[in-house]
Amino acid sequence: MSHDVEDETTVNDSYSVTVPAAVREEAGIEAGDKLRWRVDDEGRLSVELVKQRYGAFSDLEPVDIGEQTDAAEDHDLVAGDY
Figure 1 (cartoon, helix red, strand yellow):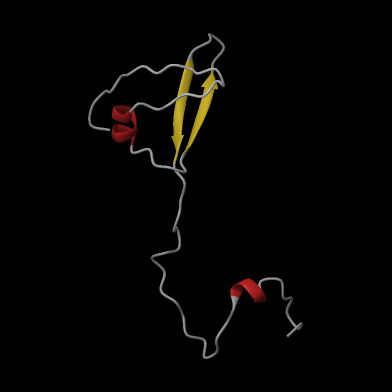
Figure 2 (cartoon, one colour):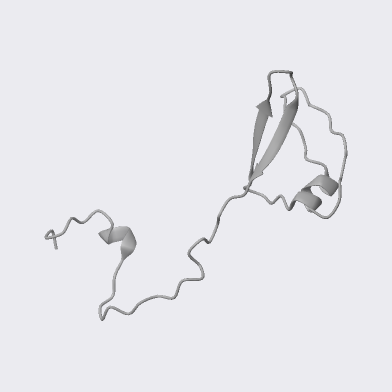
């Protein structure tokens, strides 16, 4: 993060909160990310951003093994069950 950003939000009747836009932008929070909430022994609240890793394998190149595969269909096969 390049600098401190501070803002306030209100807890609504269903105990939900909205992360303020300036905080989202500075922290790089995106839809699908998770926030880990902690309260220490002195009652201080902290929030940690837990980034989701969508597309973690998107940079990998496919390998041609000489035959077409279907991972969705083949994922439960045990060696020798072909």
